[in-house]
Length: 462
Ligand SMILES: [Fe+2]
Image (tube, rainbow, N blue to C red; front, side):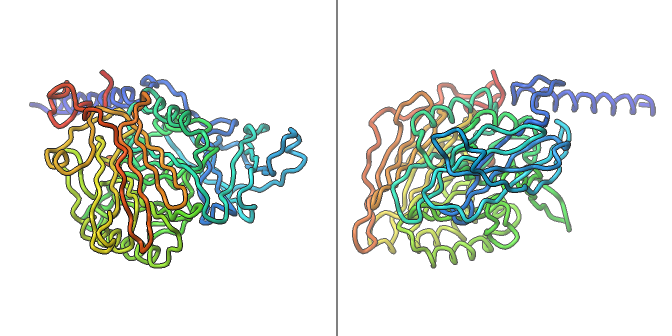
């Protein structure tokens, strides 16, 4: 082949690659190739409320505009029945940073609200260019233990607007007074979580839920970029994550954007970064940080969340490093509930630990809210109390004094799994099964259209 032929071949391959990327991007969102739906503008969008280190006295608000917004502001007042909110509001200047994406140049703003009153309903709004957002209600946590509910979502990741939006909307209908919404990572799919259109769909899907309740995100592998340095791979958090989700910053050393903790009305919530643990060798650093948090934990309940499962549920997956570094600490300090994703199936199991006097140890949940669906392994079928394929789910968890009530709902409103954790004296904890006796949900066919037998739905719309 002569040089011209070679050049032609290279061009042809490059064009094919571009077309492939273009069509993949189009199929994962509702935005056609070449169109744009989520460009930043003077209107504030992607408004999200995030936990402060102490949710009783503060919370953080982040939002996005275009670059012409040079004086981003937040106003906040105690919520009133009167519409005269602006007359009573105080104003706070935001911190801002620029982010360049395929949708243009954006400014991401955030305000860390402090010195608020506990258990108080506030109204806030954020400013764009010559306009404001709507007034948004958010209640601070009570300063002491108090019953509350939270929602949980496994990976959304694919066709987020098309097929995940119905999950978060059904969850909101079932539990409109939920105080928090937890997300176990892989909120979006694109490389390094830097596909801005996918993020546009994620914020669009949940709408005002993100700005009204506390959004508690853990990063997944799809929010990390793989970078080679010093002859080895390093997984770096994508640029969108810290700008869209300015979490408390009280995490493990070197991981302040992706690990954090806070106490909410008698529950210690801890977010870990399993991608960094598995791919960048930080499992031990996180374990030491985790141990410190659990040694000084005055709360009755502890919930831990991260992306990769301690006990894999789907075929051909295993993360033994997590069991080496984190499991003994979970068991030693009586972690109650462990929320995970990544496997694109549902599975729930619990361990019996010596330290809990024969009572149950941590309950491990893997769930999926989005459409990508894998197959449950034979091992998980034998060991998991409840599992499912081909099912979009969300969870509602209520904590009320000595009881944690867990429910996994399918997107059409069927209770698929449920149990209570009940704490008696001496630290003994019982698990009361409330799971319905419905059939285990299975994938209805042997392989996807792409021919993969380990998957039931492979992430592209049929
Ligand atoms: Fe994942």
